[in-house]
Amino acid sequence: MKVEIKNVKYSQFASHETSCFEATVYIDGKRMGVASNDGCGGPNNYDSRALVEALTEHTKTLPTRTWRLDGEALEVPPDIDTAIDDLLMAYLYARDLKRDLSKRVLFVDKDGILKQTRTMAKPELEATLRAPDLGQRLRSNRILNMMPFDVALTTYREVLAAGA
Image (tube, rainbow, N blue to C red):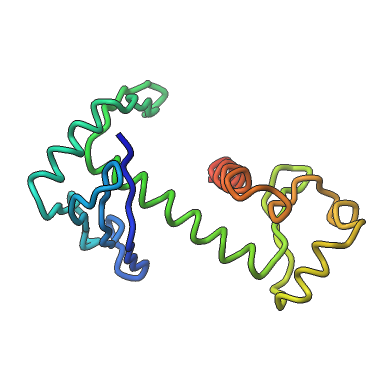
């Protein structure tokens, strides 16, 4: 079962306890309904029973998560809110990475820290990326702009998670 969100509306300023968003949910390419949250805490809202039932079935295929609390491992089964929240976070990471790649050179330094150049206009950015000695100048062989987007996104998420 393939679950996707589209038509995402996200409001960072209105996100307090939870993410404030609205998104159309598609399952196996078929529009199933809308998921939303007002950002003030509490569970997500779903506009149809069919959507809730389909997402409930989907979560049965997802692995449990292990959280650490005071050194103790807790096994947490997935639920429909965490499934939608994971899709929302994946969407936000991809959106932010696309925006940053269009304006800056992003790279991972030797210490595993994500760094970026100053903001550049598109022609300057393209010329910089074509420079044969770019990796040497940045002292990095992990330049996200030079990677396929899915690899860059995985690297971006891993580096940001490691820094958290």
